[in-house]
Image (cartoon, rainbow, N blue to C red; front, side, top):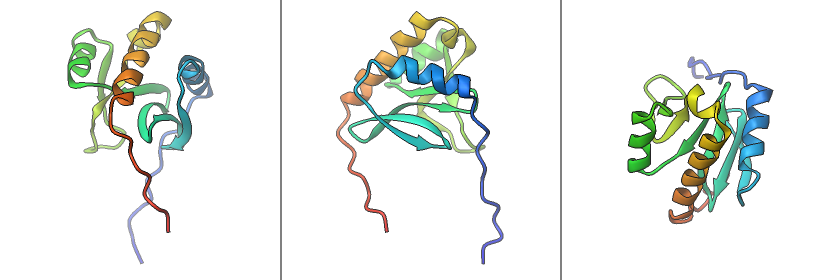
Amino acid sequence: MSTEKKSTWPKNSTETEVLLARHVSVFEADHKVMFGAPCYFVNGNMFAGAFSDRLFARFSEKDRDQLTEEGLGEDFVPKPGRRMKEYRIFTAKAVGDPSVLDHWLRRSYVHVRSLPPKEEKPRH
């Protein structure tokens, strides 16, 4: 019997989930729940999601660097020591400007669409 505590994810903000759904509605993407929150996938690859009261997305290395330099994104670390290196969590500066958020979500979507499809692992 394991004595490890089951990790619990932070509670999600309904406002954040609605914001994300509104901004990704223009994309052809599959909706799933991860981290107890909505996430969106293209060809089996996650491209964007909500985590607590924040939004995150997957980017190319060049875009990750640019987001960080412009103060629009920072490392996504959903659990201490578990950095998701290809993802950035958007800062308030990015989320506060709908056109900026749309621009970067589109860049994420285009990047993730260019990746090879990810095959789902069979569940047992």
